[in-house]
Length: 435
Image (cartoon, rainbow, N blue to C red; front, side, top):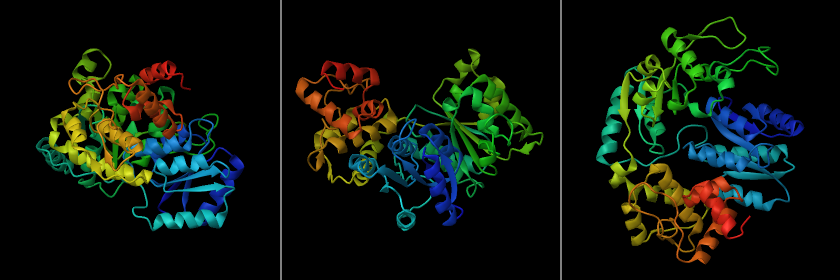
């Protein structure tokens, strides 16, 4: 079990120290975080096998961390700790997909019993969330090419729309490569702060700057021997581009505060939905770096290019979210299936998953209806995915209230579940006097 890494997210430093001591004694390799943003970075950097998190954190919360992890298509079990009196938090965490929850105060034997139960619940450990095998001709061709290029060591750039599942193709390339038994580390370049880019990618040594009380590996060290997947490279800052180009050219890097060069033995995969030709012409992206990253370009089809996959994917998500939320559903009505097939899916597979999750939350019967998906008042032509005003405003108000409550009053998650923007949701909240 020592090869499995545990992420402990707790802002009470005294309690965090006690829990870490118990976990280390039980054979876990433990990393710690005190808030949601730092926890996200650690999940992306390490091969995390299980997350133990408090709900209430100084920045973010444990349940939104859980939902973010699920959105990344990682099958990482979460155990959520809640105040003993907060039953609502416990219910909310289970509905969001937590494997288990622990009321505070937490006791050692109770904690270890829950973790032993997780080990018996396959799969335990980091890795890929189970995904449906796509059967559309466009997707089969993409997967065929991905398996072929996996055998080489060339850098691959995956081009496709947001939400289409580019990371799943990157994971397939890694799985079929000679590096399959080494780490796969995914980095969203748009989320790496410019001032922290060097330390995030290349790490730092103890004493390199104020607060550097121990050595910290960067993405390159964590992915050593394996695959480093750079998502949203179009959002990469100029400083990161210069540093990354040097590593790709010379295969070495230097952690901050160190004089020792390290070998960068990683295969680089990247993805973007940007027009890279325009980005280069506009001076936003270096041409020499682009050619290093795009030794082979691979197109990932959008969901609208794969109509054969829509209903099987919807059914897959229905089963997944029904199980996670412990809500019994049996399928889709015929009108719901027609709406799914006629909609243009500008948000691709991600939007389909969000709408099915929303439908599972709202359905009061066994079958998910068209209105549960939020497609009854939505244009099924063009790229408009906003939720238009319904003829019955009372119904609309009740729906918003129900989803808002199910999402724990989190505006971002509520807007995502409803398939509308935050701005639109705020307007509707003001309109109906909702807080």
